[in-house]
Length: 583
Image 1 (tube, one colour):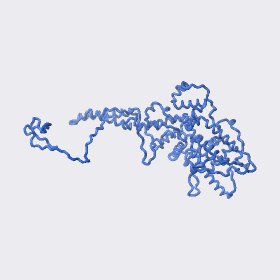
Image 2 (image 1 turned 90 degrees about the vertical axis):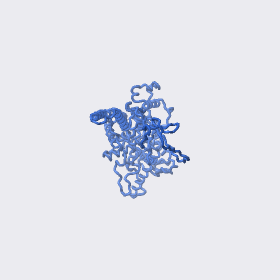
Image 3 (image 1 turned 180 degrees about the vertical axis):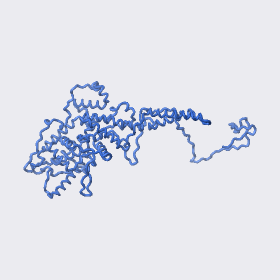
Image 4 (image 1 turned 135 degrees about the horizontal axis):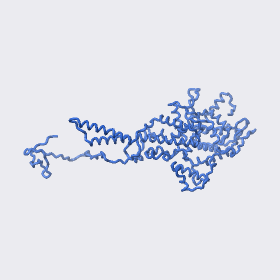
């Protein structure tokens, strides 16, 4: 910067320009002589004329108050709190199952160990327990106060040393406190942004699932693995029915959390802990299989196979069968080499006779109860055909003689299906299309009890039992305890006596023997229609297990082709093409 000129008369360096004359005068009024005044004026500016934009200062004032809710946890504290909520829900779920199914106390110990192993197997384990927010901030600020005071005293005692100002010390401490709070909270914005802020999609187009392995469905899968460890013959739909009836804490989890924990949850964490529907059978099986496989790979913990004998008996009784059908289904299941495990890696691999032979069969990772159901359907299809053609037993040694006739079996099967449809767990499930207007008095009472369990908090139910009685007064003793039981749960005296199919000496035209003319329906035939009897059994089996009918048909086709391949190899090894084998 050039130095200012001095006035030749008085020597003053203070100059100003008079607005009227445009002359430069000093502080005493003397006019500056011999100076050049240049004026920069642009004429004919082009289209690329630049303009200087005025920028507003984005610096926030120190005393600005934030609108963020101080009770909401963010960052590591929120992550740790979410795992705490999941653990508390798991404890309540374990207690509910022990009470409902009369499980031993060892079930809680197994679930506790599986929970610890599950957390250690996560790609990003939960963070360690952070310090309390207020205490950590207070300790951090107080630790800097003596340090600042000591530094101020040392500088004051030294000659020539400049002591810091009090405002600077207070500003530094306040800034450090704000930085500490920001690092603990993770965000200083209000929680209102949770409604508009959406997770960004991955570059490959796949959906982002931040809580894929730590969601509430993982608790249910953990309970399933614990039941398998104790050899409890339970299927996935049993847990799903308990969830939909609000007997197992899963839906509306905030009702089961203390108010001291729930008020610190952000909207994202509330949505992550509050699923809208119960998980499906296939989702639970995929999570359970992954957990069992990880336990074996990481810790050499082997999850036992399913307790197949009672589960197969449940499937047979659900389809209206008896001991003969159970024995035949067990033989066919052995021929099909069903793994009956959560994952095919938990069982020995198949023997490879050739290099191109696979290590495992297709659909070996399906739910085991579904595999048993398809096996029983195949046996029924062998005996009755389900193709509109009658089957007649010619040989008295054929096991089909001990099975009922087709018309008798269909009659009992329809009764079993109707009784299962009237069951309160099925009637009040999410897939049910029954209207409230169709319910009778006892079932309406059951529905009101379901609403009470789903809408009110557990402590409200214990403290105020007259909530529904005040709004919906009901007469006591209207609930029928025997109503809703399936035909398989009724006493044996209520069952109809099945007539066995007696053998006949001759064969009429169009009649076939059991197992003859077995038709394998292709799932690729989208325009094909199943026979009425086959459609009846498949549709009921799909609802009983909790899967789609198309999936059952795919598994059935794969099992049938595997069975035919085994039969062709057996006949080739025996060297008799016309010999018929009954099993």
